[in-house]
Image (tube, rainbow, N blue to C red; front, side, top):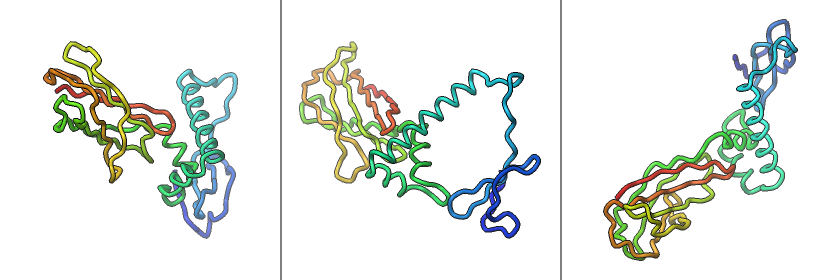
Length: 190
């Protein structure tokens, strides 16, 4: 796919010309691509293509919903949009991207109430929720709850409320959820 910005020959073109398709994008960008094939009974969609199409429809519905019902979140998406992109594009893309948990820091967790577990979570905009679960070495639930963002907004902090008599072998599970509802989990054994 070729992209032209303010080219004398292609500026403002849109439509198809033989095997070439032209379309206009934000910022005066003319996009030149291959003409799409028409679908027919002899050329039906595959199951994988149908699944992708449905996922795209869901992403579009999410982006439309954010634009119509959540101006604060839509403004955040618009703020990260690059040249030729919009807040709608960013919301659409976020639907496909799950948050990423890059680190679980348990160095301050002693098993005593008030101990801190820190998780670094990265997402397109932000994670909406980070949940922490602590289990003993024998997989018995000790406690669980939601973490809160720290003052600089980079990490999520969970403050323990229960005593964990045997920290060694315990498992901490952090689950992050973003605005479109994508989730990612990561475990750390102590």
